[in-house]
Image (tube, rainbow, N blue to C red; front, side, top):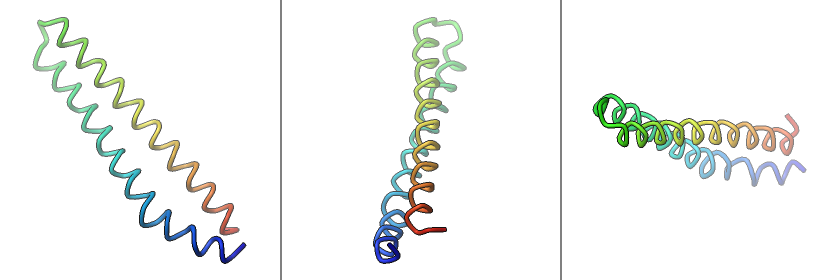
Length: 82
């Protein structure tokens, strides 16, 4: 089991975690873009709806990335026996 953890831990550390951070950053950018759309187009209801949808998509993305990070942390700790 210890050998398997030695193989999997570097994969999580060098590949999976940076990908999750990248997707987390994209989700934050989408959320912020939605806020900007809502603020810049206060009088246009279609633009506000698009901004609201971007904000919702950003929140969903952030939630998914936090959940994925927790699941990977749990799996990594279970495999390595910490």
